Length: 40
Image (cartoon, rainbow, N blue to C red; front, side):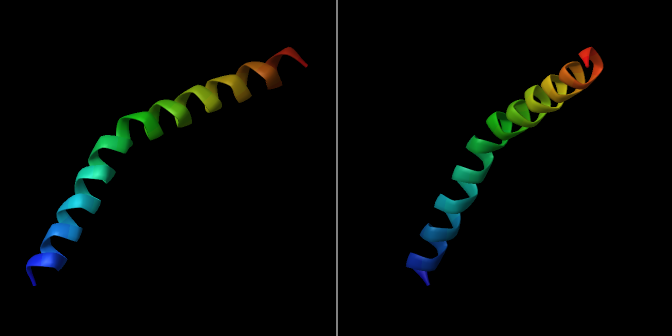
């Protein structure tokens, strides 16, 4: 049970740490797609 709890905590911390970078990538790619489509 303790090992499962540690694995869940590790997974959750990695998810929380990666979320801002994931959101930044989504925002930058959507802005890039918007500007590339507008210039055509």
